[in-house]
Structure formats: structure tokens, C-alpha cells
Length: 506
Length: 132
Image 1: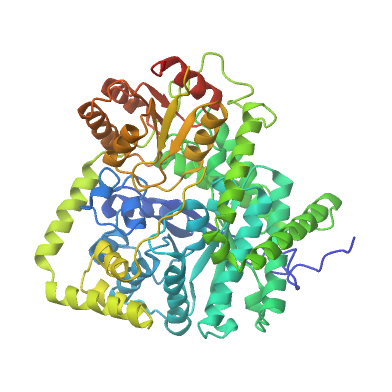
Image 2 (image 1 turned 90 degrees about the vertical axis):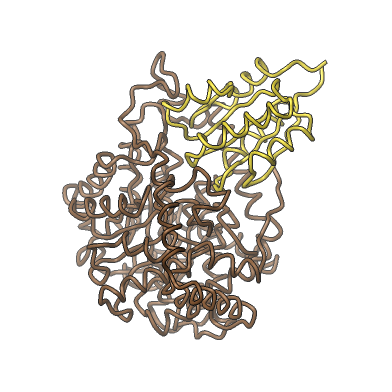
């Protein structure tokens, strides 16, 4: 077996920095959002006061799907799974008193990524911040929505146009912004194996670079701003190997497939989050231990930022106490365990190197199959990754039922007499309907006070850009400044591009 | 005895369909006739599917917290169409304070994360109407 190159050297199997975490620990970035922008703003201030070093915005389903609170499909969903942001006014409230020039923010937003990003840019500008130095991340990864999370709006090909519009806009105007977070997290949560997560995510990354290059962008102008997002799951060594394999695969793909010359294009940077799907409603305190082990694997694998899940997330969105404990878990790894002091300590271990190599080989085999189908968009249209994941999810569930896969507290070491839903569990965060009512009132008020003519003109410019193929970001920024709503902006593009419906198969 | 007919539906805006698809496949493998509606179904669409498919069971997968809106609407529409004898079950993330409310509406089974598939299969067999 060939020994891997040193940390900081191509192909970065052992890490993108020669000195690991010595100069800078990973960013402790806790994903949070619920209810109204006012409620979430208070949670962010608490997280920053507790030593969090970055923000990460969870939006509710209406926002993620580009619907206003008064749309029939938004009924009962406003503020439930995240914070509701309908217009620039909500974004101003969300970051009130938080200087965007001094922190980095990650926003989990995909189909309406361009609109939400535009709102963020305008808030930063109003606070006196400069776009040239503004830093943060938008997820903007539409391919994994078609594959796994299913929060798509438009068909795949126009959706890819929106993504590459953001690449082009940022290369010129917001050069330090991470324009995409190519995400395996949701693919894994949907049931993929570690290999499938790795292969589909990296192949998605390759697809985005190809679309950017095809749109006329020089590869090194946008590739350094591509970041990744992986799931930190429960198989400890396999996860460490997965991160090492990901760095290796990306370095070769960028250098050899795309001819990137800038080293920054070769270096895969990633965020990770512990596995939500591994959390159990039974014996929920066990989840603290699961999360700690998963977080440790991500740190040993060289994660650049990390979210640790809260113990109550199989029951509800986390309470502030549970979210603080999750952050403390990272801080104990960072400041007590000594683990960050040595870069890639498993480098050279027979088992981890062998696992890394076998994941690399397996992923390349998937790349070949997807290339043979004509690329990832074509593979998605054929339902290929979706079927692979559904099969793995079912196989896993059967293994659990047959107790071949042990889940402590669920199919093994269960508590006598414990009924699901009837357990002694921690207090949970209960989100009532008041957020929905408040957001509806604010929307009505907004529509009474804004300049309707300016909104209409801006929406027409968005439609025009979509029809003519010019960059959609400038007219979206104009619409945001006129306080057009997320639903109005997304509808403008629905009118031009239509909506996607997937072929259903079980 | 005829096969039980089950409509598995995913209401609301949420797209997390792992659970819906796994349970749909498990019920099918257990010998039931399963119709999966796909994503983002309104209560009206789900009831129309139940009527058209002559369903014995409607199973909803809801993870987003919208169950308190969706369930009352669905139960009302089922009654209005004379489908009172259709067994309704819900799986997903449901705070336990909401479970009695759902049961009072006529939802017979509420299944939380970690519930074995076999338990759901057994529940449906024991509670669905008998087809002759």
C-alpha cells in the first residue's frame, strides 16, 4: 500500500492544511431557526453569546418552497421547521443587531437561494458592510433536492441556470462568498450508504463545475468558492475514511478533469453535521453520546465546520438548553480532548487507508456509470440516484427489523415498559400557531405600504431575464429592494420555467 | 379475503419521503395493495385518491409539524365523502401532547420515529375494515 501524501499536499487525503487545526479550529456553526424572525434573532444572539462562532439559518418550508404565508400550501407550516422569511423586512429583523461584516453566516436555502442571498446582501449593505469582503455560504445545491430532499421548484435545467447565475455574480461582486455547499447530508439522511453519499455528492460537484464552465466561466474563477457538506454518521472509521476519500476525489477531478490550475480549486472544504436520522425518540439521552462520537469522527476527518444535533430532535426542534448542550459537545472535543492537536492521526493506519481507497474506487465506479448516462442531471431525470437511495433505505430498515443492525434503546437494550411517545423525555420546544398569524399580519401590512409599481416592474425584469437568458441576480436584487415577497419572485420564474413534478416510484 | 388497499400520502410542503417510501414498500411486501400519492398532496387530493382507489387505509407521513392543520381537514373531508370506515394512521414527528388530539379526531394510530414496521403492519391488519 502506498503511503499517502503529507497533509497540505496534493491530493489532500490527509487534509488541506499542513498544520491541521493548529492555526484555526473548525467553525462551530449551529443550525437554528424557528417561528418569526424576532424569535430566531433572539436565539442567534444567545448562540453567539454562548461561544458559537458562526450562524446557520434554518428556514421554514414555505420559505424553502418559495411560497408566501398566505398560500394554501403554507397552511400550518409557517415557522414550524425553521424561521419564516417572506421579504427583506423579515431579513432585516432576523439580523437586527448582528453585524454581518463581522460574522459568517450559512443559509440552508436551495430553490430560492438567489432571492434569499439577495436579501442578505441588501441587509449587509444597509448595515454599511461591503460585498467585496462579505463571507458566508448559501447551500444553493439543487441537484441533491431532486435526489433526496425534494425541495425543488423548477425543472432541473433552468434550476441549474439559477445556480450558475449566482456563481457568475459572486465571482465578480462577492468574491469571498461560498456560492454553493454541495451536500451529501440530505442524501445520507434519505437512506444512502456512505459510499453513495460520497459518490453522488462528488458527482454533483463535478456537474456544477461542468455547468459553470459550459456557461463560459473560467474554472478557477468560481471553483475555489465551492464548498461541501457531509453527514457525520455512526460508523466511526468509515466516516473518517469518507472525508479523506472526498478530498482525494475532488483534487483529482478538479486538476485532471477540468484542468484547474489554482490550488484553491483542488482543495475540498467541508461542513459536517451529525446524523439526524440516527437520533431516537426512545431513551433520548442516548442521542448525546451518538452525537459526540459522530462529531469526533468529523473532527478526525478534518471537517472545516461542524453542527452537532441536539438530543431532542427526534421529538421536535431543539430547546435552547438542548442546543447549548450540543454546542458544548463540540467545545469538549475542541478544548478538552486534545484531538485537534494532531492532523489526521489515522493516516497510515492499515484499516483507515484501506477503507479510504475502497471508497475512492467505489465512487469512481459510480462516476463512470453516471457519466455513461450523460451526467448527473440526466441520471436524476432517469431516477437513478433516487432508486439507489430508496433501495438502501429499505435494506437498512429490514436490517433493523431483523436486529442485524443494532440501535440501542430501539431494537436492543430497550427500557421495559417504555412506550414510544409515552417516555420520560426532556421538555420540548412547542411551536404554536402564533408565528403563522404574525407573519400573515406583517405580509398584509407590507403589501399596503410598499410601492406596488416598483414591485411590478422588478418582477417583470426577473421574467425578462429568465426568458432572455441574462443573469437573474441583478433584477432579483432590484425586486428585493422594492420589498417583493419570496412568493412573488419565485412565481415570476414559475411563470417562465414551470414547476417540476417527479415520477413517483416505490 | 381480498388484499387490503392502502393509500400512503405525504401532505404539506415537506419533501422528506424516506419514511413514506419505506413504509409503502414494507406494506406492499406484507401483501397489501399500496398506492403512494407522491409529494405535496392537499387533504382534498388525498381524499380523492382514497375514494378513487377504494382504500381501506390512509397512511400519512408528516414530519413538519403541520399535523394539527392537516388531520382535522382530512378527517372532515373523509366523513363528508362517506369514508368514515377508512382507517387513518399517521407516522412522523408528533409532539406527544398532540397525540390525544389526533386520536380524538378519529386518527386510530400515531407512530413515532423508531416504530418497527411490523408493529404498523400488525396494527393495520388488526384495525382495518374486513373485506370480503
